[in-house]
Image 1 (cartoon, rainbow, N blue to C red):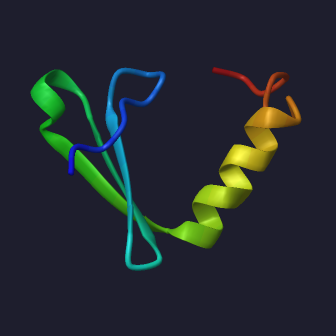
Image 2 (spheres, rainbow, N blue to C red):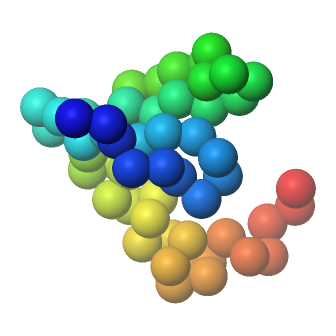
Length: 55
């Protein structure tokens, strides 16, 4: 099963209570987060709570 593309151009996959993110040139960087942390990040993005943060 191919994971759906993320908006930033990476790949996201939900598996076994974790979220695997692949990003960067050719998807060579990878990070694994607990799904609960990923859900909190998504909630902050969707509520626009991160819009005012410095880049």
